[in-house]
Length: 118
Image (cartoon, rainbow, N blue to C red; front, side, top):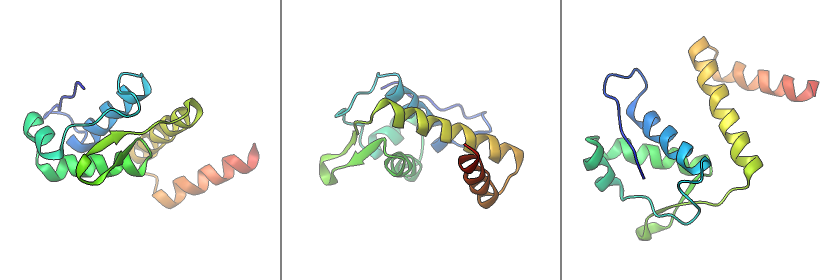
């Protein structure tokens, strides 16, 4: 797993790491069953606080990319191609609406309206 953090970027470190892990999963570089480094080890390697890496792992788990197996660690989950592409599109949408200053409620309503329009 190749990860880096650009301290000069306006993107928060947890988002940089999250996006890189997702990109590697979607590119097939991190396959289902791959164990991610422990939170503290990755935090030390990247020069981040452990809480920053823990937040990244939580968000990856909530998005369905990884699963935590207690003391055994955090592992890449298997996902079908359509779900992975849809998740990527959703992330792109969220980044766009955040840049535009659209509220979360309004962004969700825009998606609902688009789904109704088919």
